Length: 490
Image (cartoon, rainbow, N blue to C red; front, top):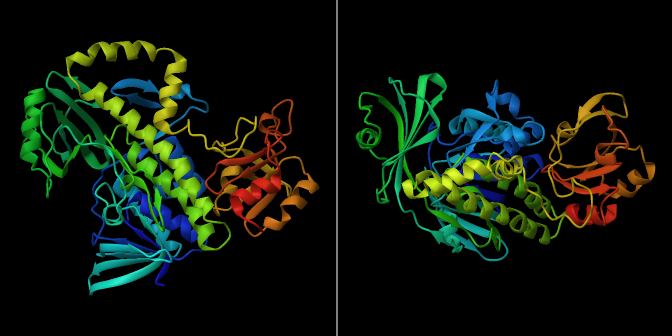
């Protein structure tokens, strides 16, 4: 066995997964076809959910000062994320290349074995392990792992080799994306709909400008190399009348509006995450963020199975929890594409939706959808409002009098049993899981009226991915049952 887990793809999802596995003590090899990072900006910024995830792993400091904003859009119609609780903010203009760099440095610092210039040729799952044929700098070799995770993008070799079903709709048009320098354009941050299509303009660090060009009626093409900047400039001029041919192209790419999702996120000992599992129109930068969240959901579960702490059934919850998220991702990005990229025939629908979005309930619903704040997992019946939802940051004072927070307690990527009522009986019942779950006695620094903690809570069981699996009062299951479900038999 060359590694308990092999991850294919060193993008954001693959690097996040590698880091999560290493935090749990699982050895991981990452195979990446490219010899070096491309440096291409690609996806920009993070949603609130990703900001929270990076914070709970102590990663935010690596990014330095991050520009944040509550301003977003749905299909080109302005949408204020500030309608959500806690003034939901997203990080703006952080290039994907920067994200990939920091995640790779983090995963490497934890001991992940990242092998660049290694292309996967074939995959064979024999039920006991997975053989991966790889072509690398020293020739072709076969590696064996207990588990294989494909994080290798929309054209995933792993997905194709294993035969995952990937239904959906093919691309109907081609769009251009370019980062350029040496020219000034008026900002079109959420895009501008024009008679022949749509254009978008936004500033990037270092004097670079991001443009997106969607010209209606352009058939999709299967390209083996990026389009020329001349193609991009010509399309831009046809749509806007502006000549940008003198600009210096930093990076040029083409993409389409295909929407597909695998029918299962695990087949035997092979799993998929990120774009390997779902492709869609890049509306609002949701793809990279969803892929990172896939990895965080999967990492601790796969580690628990590899270490023999949990049964295979725990991995079933990866598909059960993340497949519906991917399905809604495709639904909302397709809806946004129809609103944004269609012609004048859709204008009445745009106008109607704009009126509806003036109602706070509608704005909250759409904002929660595109930020991931609506996500609720099935962790069992109960009345507590946090059950199955992500634990919000809670400032705490520990039993030793030192300040901490629910976010900081999740840094080691372990389960956390938060005892908010100094209950020795609770701690005794959880003692058998001490190797897997940290029991912390603390009190909120600001206790809401009428209770010992948030929502009158006396205790919370938080999974390593930050989601609440049990709460007291408010859960129908007792604590040992919840601990065994998520952390195995002690």
